[in-house]
Image 1 (cartoon, rainbow, N blue to C red):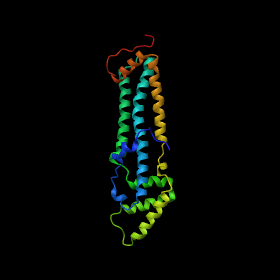
Image 2: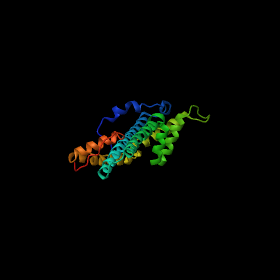
Image 3: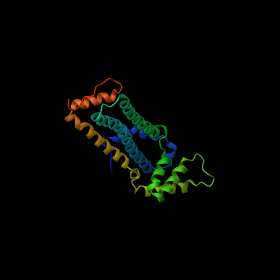
Length: 219
């Protein structure tokens, strides 16, 4: 399975992975809880890489557009300001998207069970059922603890044969990573051939309203 980077992700994300919804986990066996932690960590990996690449790609793309524009004409300050604003806006969107998903509206166990349900329909329905039952503060009068525990053991046994992490689609993170890699190569390569022009465009990019003359390649 794909893992973004070679860092010790469990140590980095341990504070975020601390389960905030203990009531959902109270009656679930340890093996099933660990599977939910695994799928949450994989989801964190994918969405964090996606958000980071989106923000970085915005900056790289904005600069690259200005670099190309400066090779064609003396890009006016208003357009340079627009490009920088677009980069900052993209970064803000990426940060807000990540914060909404992992701080403001972080998924609980029920949401993770629904994610598993989409891939493993038959097991997912029963898995969601026991999670929702564990989440109820008051059980109906016909509730049988022994039958409930038996159902949990059966579902947990079947779930143990599955890799919940496979329910998380890594393609968005892969695609964003590839896009950033391509943009990075396009941005870095000119430094080896026309460093002065690259430096000039960089200054004109992060100081769009400054009175900076364009340095042409021929110079």
